[in-house]
Every structure is written in C-alpha cells, then in structure tokens.
Length: 186
Ligand SMILES: Cc1cc2nc3c(=O)[nH]c(=O)nc-3n(C[C@H](O)[C@H](O)[C@H](O)COP(=O)(O)OP(=O)(O)OC[C@H]3O[C@@H](n4cnc5c(N)ncnc54)[C@H](O)[C@@H]3O)c2cc1C
Image (cartoon, rainbow, N blue to C red; front, side, top):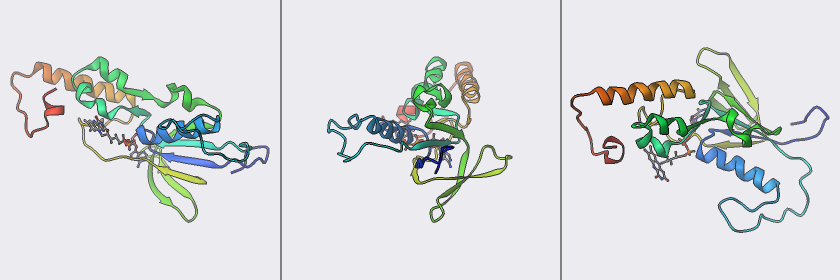
C-alpha cells in the first residue's frame, strides 16, 4: 500500500473490532510507540531498526462501535448501564488517529491469495472490496438477542434495551426457561 507521496505503508485489516480486534490495534500502536506489550511486563521485542513505515490500520465491523458482551446480564436489566456498554468507534480517540480508521460493514468473503476482503456496508448496499497486507479476523461467536445486541448501531441497541426492560417491568409473571442463572436471573 502506498500513500499519496508514494511512501509504502503496510495495511493491517482487522475484521471485528471488539475485545480481540481492539486489543490487536492497541498493541500494534503501543509497540510502534516503543512501549511494552499490553498484556506483558516484557519489553517489546528488539526490532534492530526504527519503524520507518508506520502501518495503516482499518477496523471493519458490522456494528458502529464496540459492545461489552460480558456486561450483557446487567445491560439487559439497566438502561443506564446499557448506555455505557456500547461505545461508538468514532468516539474512541485511539481509533481516530491519522493511521487508524473504522468502516461499518459486514465481511462476507476473504480471498487470501489476492489479499482482498469483500464486505457490504448494509444489506442493500453495493458489495465492496478492500485490500490488505496483513489480516486479523476477530469476529467472535454468533449469539442471539438478547444475549448480544441484534442492532448494528448504538441508537437501535438502546431502543431495543428500553423495550426489553419495560416489557420485563410491566410483566405480571416471568418464566425462566433453562438454567442460565447468570443472564436470566439478573
Ligand atoms: C453473557 C456473557 C458473559 C461473559 N462473561 C465472560 C467473562 O466474565 N469472562 C470472559 O473471559 N469471557 C466472558 N464471556 C465471553 C466473551 O464475551 C467472549 O469470549 C468475547 O466476547 C470474545 O471476544 P471477541 O472480540 O473475540 O469477539 P466478540 O466480542 O464476539 O466480537 C466480535 C466482533 O466482530 C464483529 N463481527 C462479527 N462478524 C462480523 C463480520 N462478518 N464482519 C464484520 N464484523 C463482524 C461483531 O460485530 C463484534 O464487534 C461472556 C460472554 C457472554 C455472552
């Protein structure tokens, strides 16, 4: 990948920008700044040279932000906590640096021989392609609502939680099906 000045800048494509994907991005930026790895007290590996060509990073996620899945039990019972549990990518300073950007879209195919990923920004939008030098796939596990949000943007998610909590609040009786003590009994 070359920038406007003809300067080679490797492109790292991160598909899925939640815990896994954002950890990679944070660590890459951290190592580039000469800091220790986030999960380790060890110093960064010796590179033997300074980084002349900082990479460009693209986060491709079907959501417009990071959702805190581990908070789901409380999210489903508290609108104020739900508001904290989804942070839009464009409000995260780390991601709004000149060499990091985010795209909201769903990846549908990866061609590893030509290093091209195919995605759509929404189900009726055009199919687009993006090339990369290095690929990180951090798309997690598919789970159904309400364990994880079904909405792909923060405003839709907050509307769903509002409907969900008021339907529970207004209910006269509740039946817990299954032994999901963690989520169901919250
Ligand atoms: C209720 C609950 C409680 C939990 N508690 C704990 C706990 O206490 N401790 C613990 O260690 N783990 C816990 N887990 C498990 C933990 O949430 C997962 O291990 C973690 O979410 C995995 O992180 P991830 O970044 O790999 O994937 P995810 O968090 O699933 O994120 C995947 C991301 O990829 C995006 N994505 C998916 N497919 C595509 C696509 N095709 N194109 C573009 N983007 C895509 C999604 O929008 C999402 O942002 C819990 C899980 C649940 C459901």
